[in-house]
Image 1 (spheres, rainbow, N blue to C red):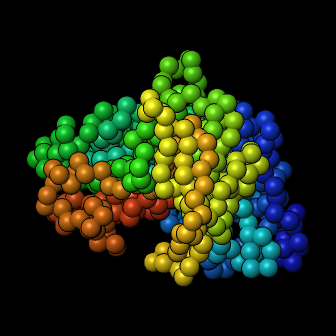
Image 2: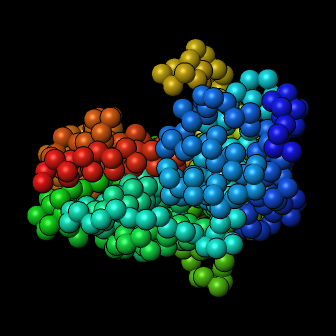
Amino acid sequence: MSKLSNKERMKIPRQNMPEQDSLTRRNNFGEVNLGFTEELAKMEALRCIQCPKPTCVEGCPVGVKIRDFISLVAEGDYLGAAAKIKEDNMLPAVCGRVCPQEEQCEIKCIVGKKNEPVAIGRLERFVADYERDLVGIRTPQLKPKTGKKVAIIGSGPAGLSCAGDLIQMGHDVTVFEALHELGGVLIYGIPEFRLPKDIVKAEVESLKKLGVDFQTNAVIGFTDTVDELMANGYDSVFIAVGAGLPYFLKIEGENLNGVYSANEFLTRVNLMKAYLFPEYDTPVFHVKDKNVAVFGGGNTAMDAVRTSKRLGAKNAYIIYRRSDVEMPARKEEIHHAKEEGIEFLFLSNPVEFIGDKDGWLKGVKLQKMELGEPDASGRRRPIPVAGSEYIIDIDMAVIAIGNGSNPIIQKTTPDLQYNKWGNIVVNEQTMQTSKKGVFAGGDIVTGGATVILAMGAGRKAAAAINEYLKSSN
């Protein structure tokens, strides 16, 4: 069957991934997408026409050899395919689930010019899960020890990716994590139904097996500064602390009880396991049979509103000031949210939260918007419609309009260069900061972005750190 002509391959339809029924899944935190079977994976892999110049790789921030791993899937060599992916990506089970392939590798797929693109992300997930379930996550051979030590601040996708590359290059690597669990946004930000935490923990364990040293409850800037790390024997530092400072709407009533940032709400539910109450007695607003509104249109907003539905919300709203066309969330997440009964209020902007005499949230005043000319983001600018205010009853609000950089590193490392948003300025080719031996990447540099872009920055930094360490012998 692998001898099919390209014409025959192009006739194979894109394979649908099995998933939980929407009426069932909105009442549990089990994974929505259930993954390909072997049969589906092979059939999907056969859709790849094995381009001489695979343009899909150009769209992958970590440079996975996509054509090669898909060829191995088509041949039934799933373990070989997993090994091929991990030459460039140490977190394939994570990326196969949460990366926006439709905007990166798949949008570059030649098959997608006339038909639907090859489901690269779903195949990546399949082989990663196959390896983990059959033989456990295998680790690569390491180069001889160099005697050099690197400190990585943050155990999110940028930090983990950088650590995986550097340890394989022979350097000693210590990852400092502020929280009590490892994984950064993968643990505290993304819900169980999109990314099971056991998968993140398995990927972290594979890095531990390689020799990466992880230190939790270490808030660099307080426990140690960057300068103190360098003075204590580390030859280089990679800052990958993410963008963990939530933005707020700055409207009247935002201090009422029942108003959360998405960071706090998702951290309580995901990291502190409020979704398993009362087994885990983590306080989170009691949303059962209540009205919940989430403000924002990105993936974090989708995560928050779908989480509230699973916690028992009577009505769960997405309130977004633009139209559905401008929403930055993944189309798959929007589709799943609609299937699960989430209500979308487009072209509506909050102007005031309304509370009762005891300080509890009871409603929100919204103003209707219309779209004008595109702004700096390329999306049409929302313009208020005079006299169009209306009120809806809500018991809880979650603000999911983005995040800024945590100021702790900035306050304790003044000789780093920052931009006006508080992000660290780097050389985009090497991720080198203005401070000798210090590199940075991920959301602390770009602002809030995707997991795979952060991983790409981690890989780029690892290569540059390796060159720096070699030149400083």
